Length: 228
Image (cartoon, rainbow, N blue to C red; front, side, top):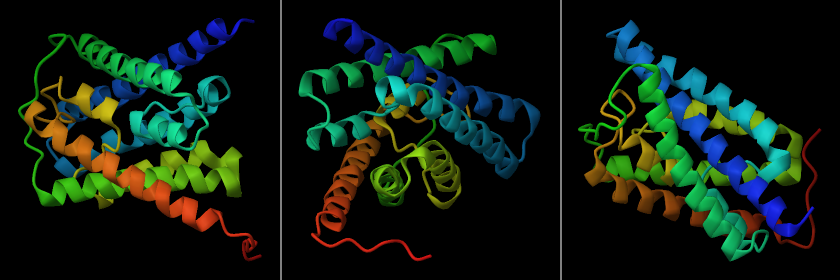
């Protein structure tokens, strides 16, 4: 197997995985809107498929590409020198394109226009802080779980994002590729295109803080074993 062929498989896995994730996020949001007018119930209907899909996708695609499905996660692994810059850039491009395709597919399944720019306003300090916290927690979970119990990463990420849907004011986008894709849907899970840059900036900040903190936690010469 050539290096180029191996890289192409990894890049394709990132595109497909991100597309399926976005389809789950947007599609479940559309279904929720059609089934109920209760906002809390709709959010629950959006949360469960997203968390479940993350567990499935990370389990299946992890051995192929690492199952990032998220440019900030890819950036973190590049900064840790676990991914070359050219491949990180290819991952990010694939994730964004896959996310856009996922939005279009979700719309097609519900017989909506392929793209409809969102009018959902998501801006302000609280929203930005929420996205920073969401991305911080996501990156911290991934990096710390790799040391503690790497086989648990799919479940831990799915559980974390499910929880973050409810404790963050932004409902935890935590992913630039997903954020961009969600700007293309004027449905339950959408975000106004004007608000996308603020979300992405907050996500990057949260991820970089998590990287720095976890690096500090894990570079001590002496390690403490978990209790029990």
